[in-house]
Image (cartoon, rainbow, N blue to C red):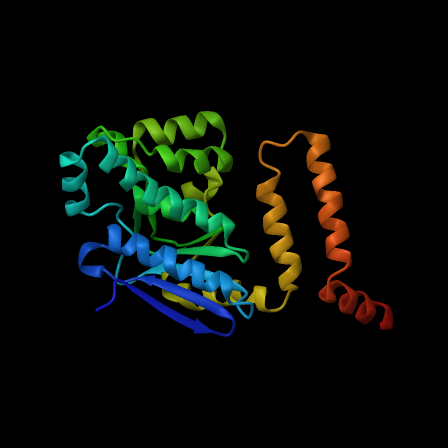
Amino acid sequence: MPELLIQIQDAIATLTLNRPEKRNALDDNLINSLKDALRETDKNEALRAVVICGAGEDFCSGADLSALQKISQSDVLENWDDAKNLMELFSLIRKVKIPVIAAVQGRALAGGCGLATACDLVLASASARFGYPEVKIGFVPAMVMVILRRNVSEKRAFELATQGFEFDAETAKNFGLINQIFDDEIFAGEVKNYVSVYAKVSRSAVVLSKTLLYQMDGMTFDSALLAGADVNTIARMTEDCRKGIAKFLKK
């Protein structure tokens, strides 16, 4: 049975973490499969969005026991290679041109919570649980912190990274970590409805918007405005924009 299931329907690619017996814990094979799948979806110009979800009751519980055992027995270079593998996954999610959306049911903890946080959008079932408990075993949510700090205030990021507590979906939304909460019973249908929006709006405009949004990180105000002017100009030249304007003017 493959550790990652890939389904494409209605211009949406769904990547399902398929280790339900291990609460979809991350190991090298699953991380590499996710990276390969994301690279392939990025090449598919017909796709409008990517959804990452988990099989069974949970989204992802973080690193599995074998991965933790490997960490405890590895030297510096081996641990660096291991950390780099996860780093590449988080970086790749932002580099994929179209939106990457986490659909979280059950628990998203440690690296699993990091995976959700790394996505462009996060949808959660009402009973979902989140947390970065790494400090409880002497570990640090180090790479996740780079993204976490961009999602919440500095003091909230400090609290989440250093206390390691678990929290519910409503709290996660209040923190600014998730976008929408849907009732458990209708979660799958509501996710489908939410994501279907990307099949109805301009793909090129969404791609340009995602690129610009993340490009602005670390820019000065004037540099960001200049980058915005460049993207504005590019957008005007796209086929989608020209068709959209023509359609609007006919009304």
